[in-house]
Amino acid sequence: MCTHTNLKGSVMATTPHTVLITGTSSGIGLAAAVAAARAGWRTVATLRDTTRADALRKAAADAGVELDIRQLDVTSETSVAAAVDGVIADHGRLDAVVNNAGAGHLGTLENDSMEDIRKVMEVNFFGVLNVSKAVLPHLRACEGRLITVTSVGGVIGQPFNEAYCAAKFAVEGYMESLAPVARTLGVSVSVVEPGAVATEFVNNIGVDLGAAVEAGQYTDALRRYIDRTSRQFLDGSAQTPASAAEAVIEALHADRPAFRIQTTDWARAFVGSKLADLDGSAVQGLTAAWVA
Image 1 (spheres, rainbow, N blue to C red):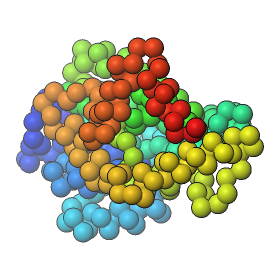
Image 2 (image 1 turned 180 degrees about the vertical axis):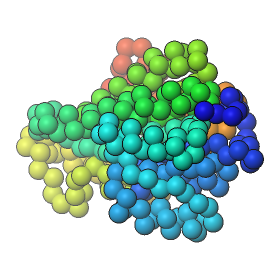
Image 3 (image 1 turned 135 degrees about the horizontal axis):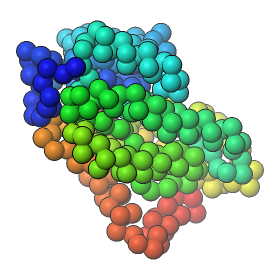
């Protein structure tokens, strides 16, 4: 039970607020965990495989902060419940949760198996719900906040990302619907929408981009998509994980965080093109050029 019932402004040093972050082995999750600890939060950094925590531990040591590193597999209700119960038992409160765990996927409907698509949904959508459902009672007790890292791909569907974008669309729709309901009980709900983040695309989609991609009749279009997208990650235009994590920390500290938060000016413009596109023609014209 929270001794302070309201989470606003800066963290109180005398009673550290507790944040749980999923998917902290690398990327935005790792950067957000270290940044939150540096900002004064008692940070529970979770990951599916704790043997992959070396980079996280090194980053924390380099920053001079302590992290509470725990195992949590977002696809397992048992694992989620054990992790959340452990946090409450050890720290007595849970003021904020950052759903960051996820996995990329590159493919298209004709070539993907239904099992492939279900796996993408399981991690990126149902995993978010598993964690959110388990933590909401504790967030209610603290009038805390639920923050989910989605993607600009949760607003704009992108070629060869059908399954991934479908999962992120689902997360955004769910959280957009949940937000006003949770707000009646004092819980703030937000989504953070990064664009291209350095190393994320290449390392997280399960495709060797250096190899020839064979996708049947879609091969030429897929190669054009990979060429176009890879340039974002190789020419320095992708933002760093630390930069993207700044938006997460801002959402933790803001008095009234926005529901939808983009991490760069490019992401704001990209998302804005969809929100102003009533008939879909602008977005289709934009993304069609990536594969034409």
